[in-house]
Amino acid sequence: MFGSGLIKGLGITLKHFTDTYTDDRKKVPSRYQDSIKLDDHRRIMEQPITQEGLFTIQYPEERRLLPERFRYIPMLLWDTEKGEDRCTACGICAKVCPPQCIWIVRDSDANGKPVTRPAEFYIDVSVCMSCSFCTEFCPFDAIKMNHDFELAVYDRYPQLVYDKAELTVPLEYYAALWPTQFADEQARMKREEEEAKRKDEEKKRVAEEKAKVKAAGVVASAAPVAEAAPVDAEAAAKKARLEELKRQAAEKAKARREGGA
Image 1: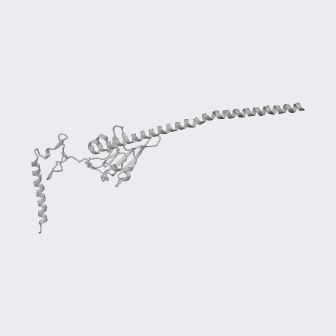
Image 2 (image 1 turned 60 degrees about the horizontal axis):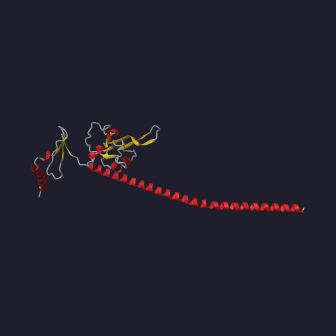
């Protein structure tokens, strides 16, 4: 029937319109009361998955509570416990970045020798596609995805080229944004540390056993030498006695020759 699609579409719109008010009246107080008050002018609204109809947020006074796995642009982590950057300037994130929006300059010491930390770290967020490849390939968990999506500026360059200072956040900030992932990473790091400790203890035990075996071998090899020493002394004494007898015999033979003469 001509126009049936239009009528069906309007029916779906009407259903969403009525569900908005029906779902709102099911809850006392209203579903819009489930919010977190930041201050007098800002609130964080939590939108449940099971809600029906439309959910209106009065942005920017009200903002939606973002899910943990929401990602926008990368951020660099500062390890507050160690007091250093997690980033070692290995450059893997820049190599795997599809739009090539990351570039890094490695730092160097007073003698000009490269060191494992970035002197400069830039991300062109106007090009970043929020793929999170950099976070997945980073071997040191030094770069993660931020939730900050309010990046509107008047000039694209240089304001949308973020440097190291703008990208760096403390580890506690990441733990607050990604609590589940942070807990999993901490548990994994603890297991790796325990495994490394166990391997070190195993290597130490094997080295001690080898040292004991080597020491026992040295003692065993020294014992026959000590036993052979008296035998060598006896042989030398016999040889010296034989030489003495030969000398005496030679003297007697000489004396007989002289007496006969």
